[in-house]
Image 1 (tube, rainbow, N blue to C red):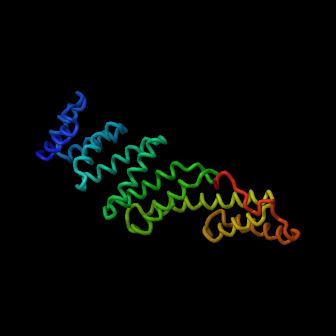
Image 2 (tube, rainbow, N blue to C red):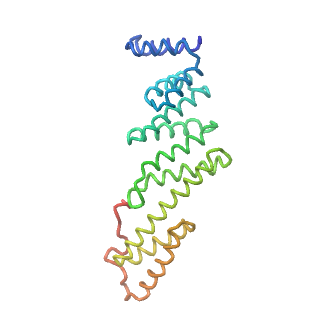
Image 3 (cartoon, one colour):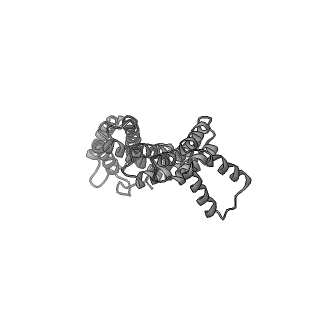
Length: 243
């Protein structure tokens, strides 16, 4: 309790001892509670999906006890409240906080959770195989870290599943672009895409379709006149998803 009081004094000094009535009531409340009780207050509000209110309690514990395991847990819970809101702005904020946690505390036992959630934030922002794939690649990287570094953690099974899902999206992208190249007779570009698909995503659903398409590409190249089989771009046609 004395520790909470000292923290409150520091907060008030940092703010020039000025606070709104609402803030004063909040400080009076948390000043009478232990850090565990403050965190529990946040949990109770989060259970009712009152994310902003819960965040006040979590933020207090996280800011007041940054080097305490409970403070770090509270920092993750702050990020969780943003993730739960699902808006673009909230997901971006959650992503920043999960990334900061995973970078700042590389040896924390909750780092696997932070990386898993970081990947889920990225995946939530993905818009399909024909749109910008940067979020999917970022998600795959985060899930891969969980699988490789925390293979026995409770988060590993979900990370493996989401990694496979991310890789399917990346593989589908390669197939769709290759098919586009094939349709416009940019056969060299199609072949390069399909070779990349088969080399990097051999177990994907897109790979089986890619093998069949590659046979058609090779046949088209074999029957094309010397120097033909491409449009004028030399097989380097770019789609909007590649930019």
